[in-house]
Image (cartoon, rainbow, N blue to C red; front, side):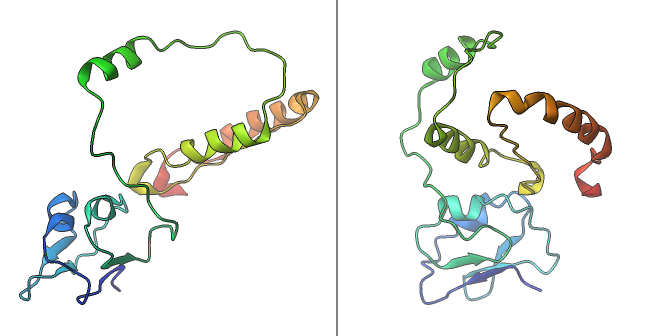
Length: 154
């Protein structure tokens, strides 16, 4: 069953989605439109949606929410080097609550991070208030040994 469908009335045939498909799932058919290859090897990376210039593609395996467009102007190497080389691990924390809106914004960004085959097999547990942490620490210790490590086992 095909997961990717193309609206031929909207497609501009620029082949951008086919060219960026890392698994080769999208190919160009005889009419010049992209279509899903019969081997069904899509890895759900979303690359095709990041580059398309029209709204011709739909993918049943990807979230329905709109993807943010890729930046046209990317930071230069100096900015990226500085950002990565100046990163520090936090070893001391302040014992004060984090605003719910801030936490939701951070988690929204974190959940969009790349995962294997875009599987998104992640669980976020927010413990509030702080005095509840000891209750959850035992649970999390148990959980880390009871959940399969390999994504295919999920």
